[in-house]
Image (cartoon, rainbow, N blue to C red):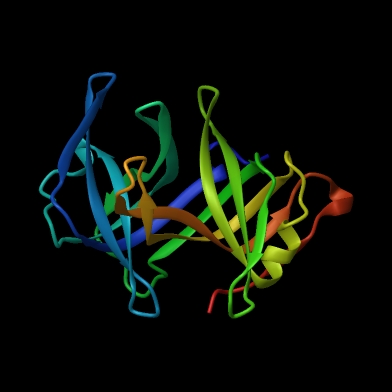
Amino acid sequence: MKNEKSTNSVFLQGRIGSDIEYSHDLYGERFYEFKLNVPRLSEHLDVIPITAAEGLIANLKENDYISVSGQFRSFNRPEGERSRLILSVFAREINPPINEVNPNTAELIGYICKPPIYRTTPFNREICDVLLAVNRAYAKSDYIPCIAWGKNARLIKNAPVGQKLDVYGRIQSRQYTKRLDSGETEVRTAYEFSIGAVEFMQKESEVASTSDEEN
């Protein structure tokens, strides 16, 4: 059986792209937030929010090149009568960069908690959105939006709520325009887990795996 840490693991490498700002206190420990600019092969940058304890960020500053190991976590932030799902990478370790490694790798083991949403793009590319509940210590769970493409999208689209998945891939950022209740629009950044490979874990007779690298 995999332990708690292995159900949610992230490795990122890139440059700090923002000021390091105080976030909150928890059990007498101070936590800080910053953005990490993580390169893709396409030269696009994924801008990933990082949360780290004070002891991990000593002497760090904007533009430093670092590696981060941790977990992809979520929490709900109240916004009026609604709440908004906030995602960030919780750093367990921050180290100097490592040569010749993939700068963005992650693995989640979790349960589908909403029916998957399957669609195709105007260019006939298949996409499936799925929300995974990933358990962690103290009876808590992180709710992670994931996106699958091609063969993986077809594999996941009919999976039932409660299905356990082991997914491998990377964390990505994208901007979108949100229409507010006032009628005004606001550009926001969404974060999600881009699935490169998936394994069904519910029943031995139903185990299936595939991989589909994003172009």
